Image 1 (cartoon, protein in one colour):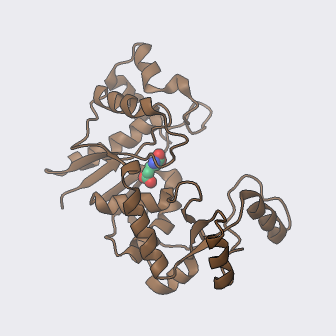
Image 2 (cartoon, rainbow, N blue to C red; image 1 turned 180 degrees about the vertical axis):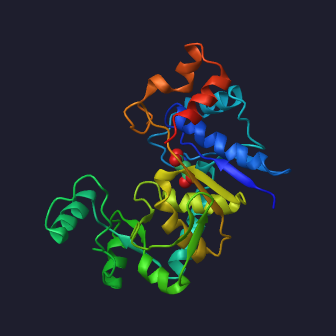
Length: 282
Ligand code: GLU
């Protein structure tokens, strides 16, 4: 099989060693097949957080590190129509519902159900808007009340039946609809969401192997559901370890000292940086 992989950063900050590991894993897997293709996709749907100069800085770092991609980089911001069509397809199947809740309301309702504050872990959506009266919902939408669209994951499960996904390091897992619950498919502000856009584009770009950090392993459950509902092919997954600092904390955009730019400026070669990325995985 001809392997197609992608590296999908968000142009909201500079690349750090964690990104470089992700890009290298995707590149190496594509290059392991004779006609493999390694793609670059800018995940830039969240316009409020995108920094224009970051597209260029990301591409410059990748080229300098020898992690050049094939073809033109795709920008998700140019694909909003495609995400809208996919949402419509899910709505036509009545597997999405409008949600009028604010963050605060969701938090209060979750605490009421659980009987205590839930700490830092993002709780599942408590389902407040799942079974609202259809006429009332239509009236609220007509009146212009802001709303997102949520995935009805349990109803979707009845539709697609049992699902699994297979990962080159973790083996085969059964899809658990409670791993994510009723995720947002279309945010109030941007009309789409990470989960929807990723699934639509992986299919559009014919990605055969989705490689990414193991922090996104949980997201795969709902993404497999969306693929099944939308009639997309099932990719193979490879969730890799994360790059951590000396204290074992995962690198984030705020770790400017570890940005590729600053490592380059302090005299590290491309080969050294690639090695550092691989050595800091756990
Ligand atoms: N944009 C995601 C990230 O920065 C990767 C996309 C994905 O593989 O789901 O981790």
